[in-house]
Image (cartoon, rainbow, N blue to C red; front, side):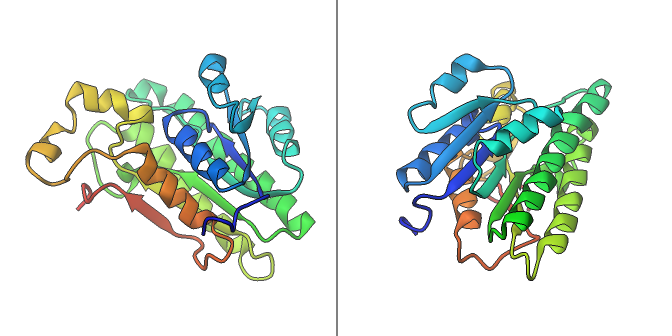
Length: 234
């Protein structure tokens, strides 16, 4: 698969964080033209400027979403990493905006552009294992992510067939990168490692490889959720 993405434009929304930056470097090594957006951390984003065009964009802002999509006029792929941890139910409304509204609006706008251009492309959104396994006190985070999964499958159905735009979801487990690092540091998931339920915590590379799978131009998968969690939700 190492040559199949060469020269293709791929947007990584929220792609300058721990999971996104690993994905950006993987795609860049294969010759893809990567555009990565960030919301507020310009210092961290600058570290990715050697492999990607970096753009500031708030996905809740329609003009920002349009500007991000304009940065890749021949867009083949979109991967949406954007989100927030939301560990308190007081943050439910904010979480709904960050983890559902912004990502799904961007995905739908990207799909509309792909349809108009006749592009046979791929859209990937990032959810969480918490949409398939029940964790106490996770409503503010997991409920919007569960809504995202359902909305993505609707979009996949709308895009199947003649449009040939594949839309899928990756649900990471506990990764020692990105938002889950704080949970690992707190010991929240130590029991799963100590009991042998999982062999290790996830790595950013695990998610990058899953994204790469869905981006493969000859991929035959759409409307699906791939849980990358080392078996934790079992």
